[in-house]
Amino acid sequence: MSASTTPLPEAMPHVPTHGREQESPFTPRALIWAVIPLVLLAVVLAVIVRTNGGVDRGATPPIETLSVQRILLPAPGQIEIRVVNDGPDPITIAQVLVDDAYWTFSMNPAQPLERLQSATISIPYPWVAAEGHAITLLSSSGVGFPVEIPVAVASPHLDQQSVLRFALIGIYVGVIPVALGLLWYPFLRQIGRRGMNFVLALTAGLLAFLVVDMWQEAQEIAATAVSALEAPVLIPLVALLSMGLLIVISHALRQRQQARGKDSAPLTLAYEIALGIGLHNLGEGLAIGAAFALGEAALGVFLILGFTLHNVTEGIGIAAPLVRERPPLTHFVGLALLAGAPAILGVWIGAFTYSPFWTTIFLAIGIGAILQVIVEVWRLVTRSQERGGEPALNWVTFSGAAAGVALMYLTALLVAA
Image (tube, rainbow, N blue to C red; front, side):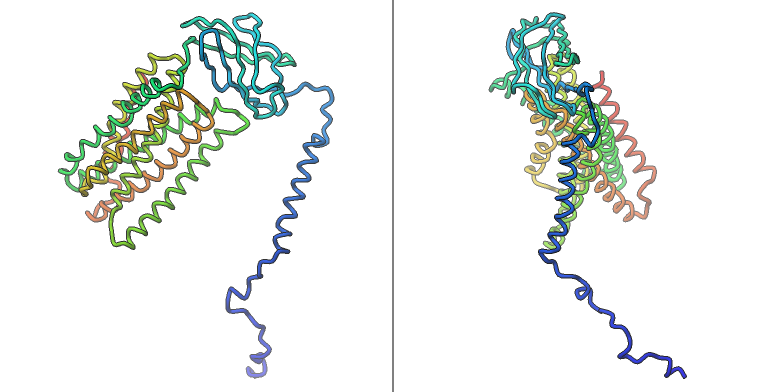
């Protein structure tokens, strides 16, 4: 009975056993079908732009938005304003008022200013040093865009003397304090396992504070960027992409080291920490350079003093993974330069050429880099705690993380003061 109901082997449907047999070969026809929707989409978008989506705007006024990116006073009697058309429609600057008086001006490139196009407006006005000036840019449709110069101070010139002077500021802010923090390395080598875990957790706390600080700074700068570029939206996206890329690179380096039979993970982690801190110091340099470019010399000096004290603690975080290693002195020099030298670049960019959008991108990259380092540091803490039969988070590691946050907060108060 059962034999009569059981299908013969020949009658059973054939089921492929290999995934390769299920795959269809890629042909030029498949490529054509992939391109056709994109071409049709381009045609539809072109029609929408050409016909305004079927909406009759009639005699409605244009939507005009102008973003002021930088104000320069390159020479006595000369004002330069760098602007970007942040709106959907072209803009023509018809008149310029300086201190409630109409003034002649020139614009490069020539008008009208198309969407997202940048231009420099030059005004031959006898500005007075240490005094404020109010400027209004009037479009052809009567829309006014106010521009304020709080304190008129000649802008830095890109010459050898200025380059060297601002490089020295970057060394004061970045390289020297990080190098001083690395001098705690011999002391850190004398502490035991729990002491090392405390310092590693302290490093994680330091880096967590830097992430929050950089996030806030990126949001503030993104608010001044061209709104059409959606800089605030890019902050978390760029941070996640940066973090993911560094995780992939770190994993590849770890596999290569294991293949060679070497264990240089602590040194690699130290360099990763130095890279993240270096990107943070780049942002600090930008703030200092921008302060001097805007004529806020007193603020710039206080930023130098505050950041110098603030960055000494960063050297401890870089040295923490190396307490069980004996790297050559050249590595310590490289770590100090990697973490501190970006401050020099930041001061140069902030003083001579400053872009809110790209500054936001750099800070977002730094956020992602530091997040990746926090993951690596805490992984090191977890392994060390497991070897001692203790949980990753106990009073020792919690106290270290809290101490790191408190230390960075207290030194940050010096910057705010």
